[in-house]
Length: 149
Ligand code: RB5
Image (cartoon, rainbow, N blue to C red; front, side):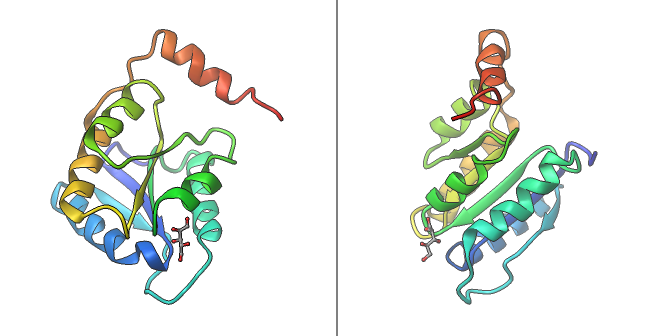
C-alpha cells in the first residue's frame, strides 16, 4: 500500500489538460502522483482508463484515485461498475466534502470540459482532507458492495 500522500490519476483526451494541471497541483502539495494516462488530447476511450485506475485501487496498491473525462460522467459510470470502488462526480466543494464524509468515496471524478481549474483544485483538496464519518454511514457503504442486480 502506498502512503497517504500517494494517489493515482487517469483521464481520457477530454480530461487530459485538467489532469495535467491537477497532477502539478498535487505535486506542489507534496503528493506523489501515479499517472495511468492518457498522455495527450488524441481521442481515446474513457472506460479503458477507468479500468486501469480502478484495478490498482482494487489490488490495494492505492487507496484513492482521480479520474477526469469531459464531464466526469463517463468515468464515474465506468468506475462504479467495479466492486469496492465508490466513485463520486463532484462539481462543488460541498459535494466533495459530503462524498468523503458520507460515502467514503475512493475515486473522485471531474469534468475537464465543465470544471474550471481553481474549482477543481478546491474540490480535490476538500475530498482529500475531509474524513469519513463512519457510524451509520459505514453500514450503508458496506451495503454498496452487496448490491447484485
Ligand atoms: C469525449 O468526447 C467525452 O464523451 C468523454 O470525455 C466524457 O465526457 C464522457 O462521459
